[in-house]
Image 1 (cartoon, helix red, strand yellow):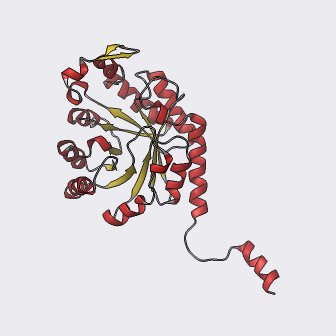
Image 2 (cartoon, helix red, strand yellow):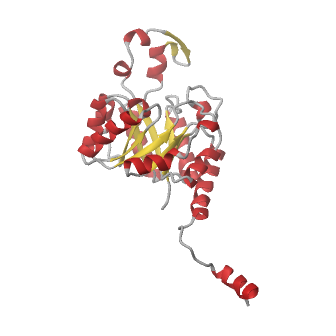
Image 3 (cartoon, helix red, strand yellow):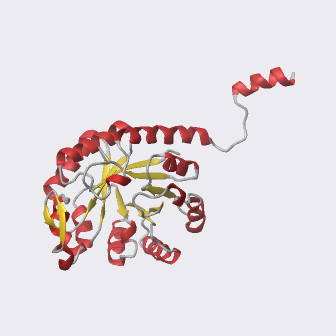
Length: 274
């Protein structure tokens, strides 16, 4: 079965539609199945005290200026929707609040995503599960009890879902990947399990496919040195192309698990066994 590969643009577009389109183009060229964004209603996700706090950014000197500078509105999402259809790639977004999820409902996206940070937001989970779209549920920072509860909500709504093994550090040290957990989650919850990675490079994500991950999600960037909190945990265009190729090769390498002799092996058998 083909691994579903998601290029997470997130907020790495830095509020710039031209940059967003370059990232979409990169995902298309690499052969990804989908691109993903993040949507927030700034005043719902953050407190006034936090938003009034100081922060230097390209958009000003407050947290509010920075957060609002990174957000796309309806005009931008209309263009993302149009552009992705033109390029033939699926898109969707993870909502960080109820208003953002309702905003996304105006688009005919095939998928939803529950970010690790939102796994315990019951109101949001109920809204997403009620849409009954195939949903990727990230499990970073989460206990089994918290995952149990989220799974219960999705099964109550009969909403199809896939868990995503995840370690929510940016970037994640390679030794913290714990990829054996992919199979454990699959056995425990009886569902597909993907991998959402934040590590440097592509080796861990490729290994995740060998460990049974049915989807791979990675943050992408045009340049890790650009402004942004997620840039350092992202992969650049050449790495994304390498990752997609390595995943497709890994699928071939893993094979079917059936014991069978290849035609080439049959020829060797004739020579060596007479």
